[in-house]
Image (cartoon, rainbow, N blue to C red; front, side, top):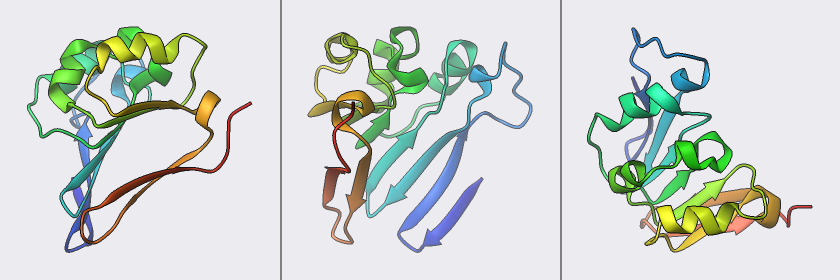
Length: 141
């Protein structure tokens, strides 16, 4: 399903498909793509395991911002996900001390890997001319 918020802004449910039944709740996490002025933000929730495999089976365009699935857990952030999305920015809604170092090897071309723990709450702003700006509401603990 796709919701047009503006002629140039859409919100699309990419996964799961209506009849998908994963092994657990996380496998059925809602994956949303926000597309605005030729930029893409992918929100993956707690996606993992067979839900991740199901999502990866469908090709799609690269994304500008990827919310790393399952709070940045390595098992949910795979080389296949990196190849599918090729994110410019990776945001992690958690983050232990070693999270960024581990994810850097998975997303080597990302401009930055940011964590809520280290960087606080983040905002991605996309202007009508397609410029993307990432800003922080403050540092984490």
